[in-house]
Length: 364
Image (cartoon, rainbow, N blue to C red; front, top):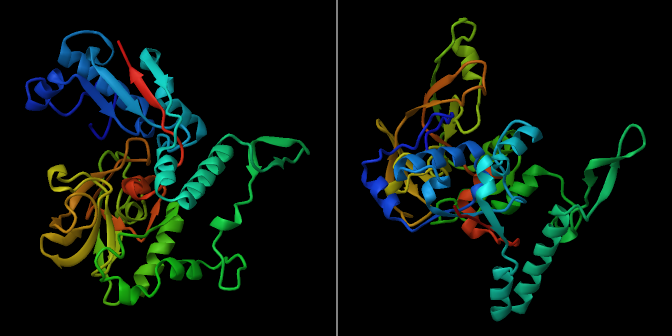
């Protein structure tokens, strides 16, 4: 997929390539977690497959199976209305889709065969999330006019998932929370897989940055700072100086001032080399720094344990996100002691999946 999509863009392989030949021979195409991407991505794939197959059928007449859950992560857009507009449901192609739903929670069913206690926990969590998503929990928020707000509720979290101190009281200290999930980080961070087995999730980047900074301080060793080289690609006004560009932190881009320590856990922000396991969302441990970039060890996937070098690359902000297009030459990584909820999808294999996932089938 191209990074920037418009109504004329196609996929990044030609109709005469080996990839094109493979797609032509394919009987079935699968797309997992389709609800996370915008309808523009769906339409881009449709355009390319029609051109590839030489017909005007939806997706070139190929049988396409989408899997996803509208109650989980939706396309990232600015505002509720923009998010709804970007969903696949608002694409004209959706008229060609037949929807089916999975109704059996396989995690619960498998747990019942092994451990009834675990099955009861998974079932409780599944039921709780289902009720929460359906709006069956909580009390309505009362607006200024005294009427109940129809779009928000106050929900009290169950005691069993609330972090508490040693006395059992709800703990509000971020430092205590970090110490609980990163206990004795100074002595444990070098243990194989210890950092990769844990992370703290938060919905906002500022919270993630605060947690990352606090955990980084606890690591022994000197802090290594990498500064980016920033420029404005399409700035005709001359208003945006380098000092101003350095303060911008667009989504999906590393900061201007990137602070790291040897042994810290990182997340890759760009697809660099899929065949070598260097994809967006790959988690890495920093081993060394040299003239070419960062020497890291892959901590996730089939390439776990392999050493790789992460170079500086030139990144550009999304069109329309900033007053001008920011071009930033920087190492494409961020600290990953904490991550935003969207990025946690890279590690979803470790996370219980309590809700059934609909299967969406496109037939022409």
